[in-house]
Length: 183
Ligand SMILES: [Mg+2]
Image 1 (cartoon, rainbow, N blue to C red):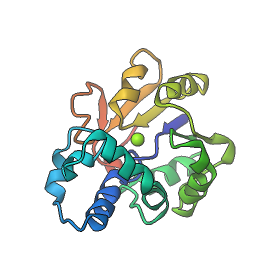
Image 2 (image 1 turned 60 degrees about the vertical axis):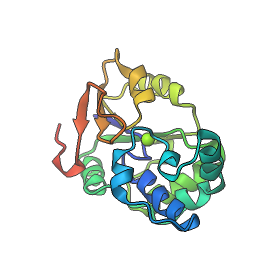
Image 3 (image 1 turned 90 degrees about the vertical axis):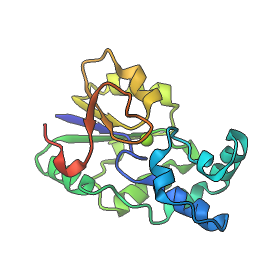
């Protein structure tokens, strides 16, 4: 079967990693309980920033956020390794900016994920993911972002949301922990 995965906040804990970096840069110690209540994908609210300041902060720290020691979600590596072992096809579909794509692919490999270069899609807009997912004829697709999931309502691919504080209203199948997922 063909499995597609978003990367950030689906397979890896990127926002929380960024949250720690923001605290450090701003010399603050905002607690994770604030993080866990956020209803937006963006994290700037927790630091009292508006969208513009938040966007500037995010972009200025992008390389540090992407390419340091962002943790992988528990069970994700084991699941994908097992899928690969069973002969399933694993696709990665990330809307990270184009200029970070090859470094991202290498970073994902370095974490131990099974990556076939031709099955790594990167650098598209969120709304373009739907075309890729359709064209790839995926059996399963996993993402965290409501704006992406909303475009995937009427396709035959079985779509799952990776549980996050900002997507609890998405009325679709949900993965709380990768170690609990089975198909
Ligand atoms: Mg994501």
